Amino acid sequence: MARPDGRRPDQLRPVTLTRGWSTHPEGSVLVEFGETRVLCTASVTEGVPRWRKGSGLGWVTAEYAMLPRATNTRSDRESVKGRVGGRTHEISRLIGRSLRAGIDLKALGENSVVLDCDVLQADGGTRTAAITGAYVALHDAVKWLADRKSLAGKPEKVMHRSVAAVSVGVIAGEARLDLCYEEDVAAEVDMNVVCTGTGEFVEVQGTGESGVFARDQLDALLDLAVAGCAELAEAQRKALS
Image (cartoon, rainbow, N blue to C red):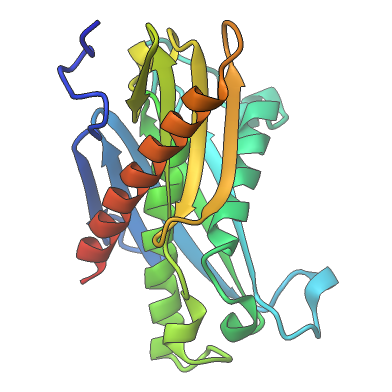
């Protein structure tokens, strides 16, 4: 069964990271995974939440949202509904956890960075694209703090490892990397994997959507994800160079 866009099973969609896409934030990146487009902005605030004051540690958190017409039908804004949905809350927490794995909060000092990840157009893999782009936006926000001598540690110690994420899944019995929406909805197994630039796992989220999966399938999916994240780490490095 051929992929909808003709890619090999182990091939990423075209990935683009455009820094400085938005004028006002301390860091901003438009990340594109094929037709999926997410705007990631990093906003710096001096100080930390009340529960963290006096610790000497900084804080990094994230908020995720999807524009009403990011998909083929319009969705109501969650601000109009009056509450954040469970999926949105879960993805926001995932992005925050993932980015904290790549930063030394002690070297950051008592500064806070909020990463806003807004999906402009969705075609599968929005959370993984958000994590990959948010890392670059966070890197630029840290550089902004370094330029103002506002860090507690050396700049190179703050962002001590890169973090990227990709989706993998099993469709028609075949393990595939970086699923588009058409593949995502048909997946027998669906997984999101967050890795460091050196191949360690930050988080693995996987489920059998229409059945169970064997250990060899899990291993194949993780191998695909690690290879995909390595390519994404290189794309991040090039974007930041």
